Image (cartoon, rainbow, N blue to C red; front, side):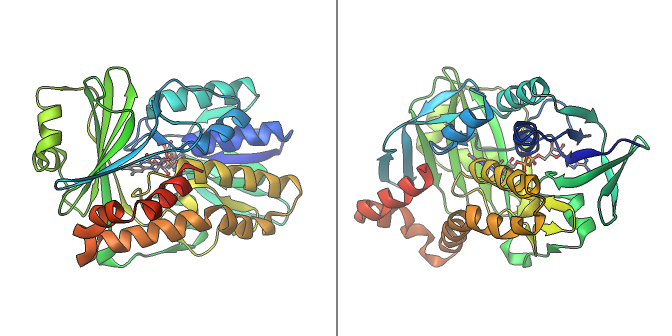
Length: 346
Ligand SMILES: Cc1cc2nc3c(=O)[nH]c(=O)nc-3n(C[C@H](O)[C@H](O)[C@H](O)COP(=O)(O)OP(=O)(O)OC[C@H]3O[C@@H](n4cnc5c(N)ncnc54)[C@H](O)[C@@H]3O)c2cc1C
């Protein structure tokens, strides 16, 4: 029986990045995914400027639309901040997946179309059973199977969120020329609407809010946005995600590590997820390369700390009676707002 170094469960962006980092470290890697083959997912698709060095390390340069900064709108108040330094990029998930998949295959990762079913651990190895009946034995397993991670559930580390705290996201693309090279964020009374330009003729619309949020209703409730999108043809199917937050007590049990959304995800309100996920992938591979998986949870805390603090704070504010003051406050204190956006840009 041959034993691979790492089995990665999930070929989303973080699973594929994990596989590429593993190959760069000289580790043999098998990636399993049994989900949709197009790599599409509800996402705001904004890659913040801080993602650029990580994409370069991964050796990919996916096509997209430059993102110069962020504009927040609430009622008639508008506040804009341009990223210092290099821009970010709006990238369709399908194109990000294609670039990562091509790179992972080139680097020698083995990709299998199969679903993770269950897991057993020994002292020196872990064994994954797939829905095709195969057993894959490896020195380490890395769960990158997203928000509803079966790997995290099987490890018994998932914490249930409070009922009232649950939020959801939906997304659809529209064929229209982007009217801004910034991410445009509209705060309505119960939802946040993100417009991300992803090509010269397409914008992505992502809506975040409580259960039951509806894309059409959200757009119709924001007159400026409705005017811009009226008549624009939908350019992708409607996709939904959630609920979040997803919380895990730890990101490592024995020889199994959790990376990306599977190990914990707060909310999409700060338009992050990919940057912190890529950073976790790097940290996990660094830990297992040294045969020190026990060091990963601390590294996870370090690379996700700012994201967790800022995102939790913003969600709490957006869910409080102060919600209507968020953009007016940012307008009154542009220095503070700029500091927060610059932090996101890192
Ligand atoms: C509405 C919304 C807007 C967002 N906007 C942004 C943004 O603008 N910028 C940003 O950086 N982040 C954003 N995010 C967050 C970002 O989408 C996630 O953090 C990111 O997708 C996490 O990637 P992942 O690979 O961990 O998980 P996923 O992308 O969910 O991938 C998980 C993979 O695991 C596979 N899988 C699941 N179960 C199994 C199984 N049993 N066996 C095998 N494979 C399995 C799935 O098929 C999938 O391919 C947003 C999220 C939402 C919901």
